Amino acid sequence: MTDVVSPEVRSRMMAGIRGRDTQPELLLRRAMHARGFRFRLHRKDLPGSPDLVFPRYRVVVFVHGCFWHRHEGCRYTTTPKTRIDFWQAKFEANLARDQKVEEALACAGWRIAIVWECALRHDAGRIASELAEWMSAGISPVRVELGSQRKVLPVNTGPHW
Picture (cartoon, rainbow, N blue to C red):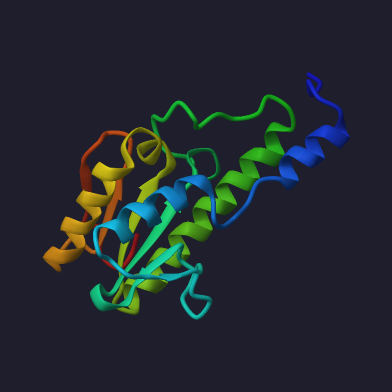
């Protein structure tokens, strides 16, 4: 099966995909700032350079794109029909890197929140409120996911995911 656009158009489209300051990330940043939370962006001294860092709460937040980070059960988690082996290897590498980064952060004493892009598309304000509530509680779990299921999903996996 061939691509529906030319290689030049595909290259331009892929070059436009950013790793930071994405629309979902900006939505969450605005919502958290409006709630009075202050944060740092993309701290390079932390594993994975988290999208948002709340040092006061010892919390890092990753805003994951459903396509790139393979959000299970999400309609945006599609797999291209061309070069399937390439894409499968790419997705597996992304997931392995995510897991390694989360392990390093947890071992360093950080709490981790994963916020899925699809959840922010539907209700960034509610997601920000749930994130704020979890952060302020200062209790377990070490990791939460805020996703399209529209609720906080605790994941108690310990130091070895």
